[in-house]
Length: 242
Image 1 (tube, rainbow, N blue to C red):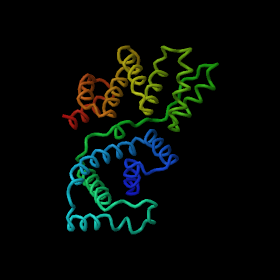
Image 2: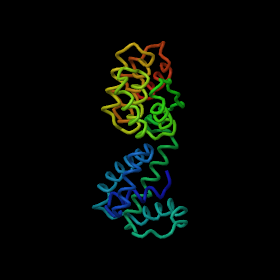
Image 3: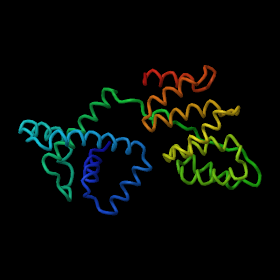
Image 4: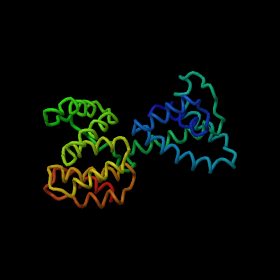
């Protein structure tokens, strides 16, 4: 993450962003999963450190150490419109350092983004639905998941039992964090006999992973059989979660 994002996180938590900045920030949280995860981590660490330091005087040595950590970055930036108080700079620098150490040592738990890798899709042509199918296909391939979901939803009015449409609509909803819709579609597929049966189970597990429901993710992964395409990936993820 860009260190500037940590300042943005802190200003958001302090309620110091303008209305327009808040709208832009929350839109980014909605559409950028890595930004969202970094914000959640920052917020958790911020809460811990604020509780720890709010009733204590931070020592001069500690302040100087943290200033050195962030000096190389902050000196290159223009002065922010709203300055942090000293303890806020200390908190931001500490969180940035802790996040960096965690990433460097690969100590973090598995992340949804590491496993949700989609190839470009090419939907089966069906005559009268060509235009809508192309819209769904292009939107999905360009990661415009909201537009893809709308197109898939319209297509399924006429073909509600089409496994291909169900699967990719589920993925679009998963990317949009609409877990209830995604999991309903995936569960239906996992209980059927289509070519997407075991793929659906894999993505049900990833849905739990994205929501940080690690125990649920683990249990779902264990139901993927050896002959499934995603079996090896499932086993590797199981080892990381165990």
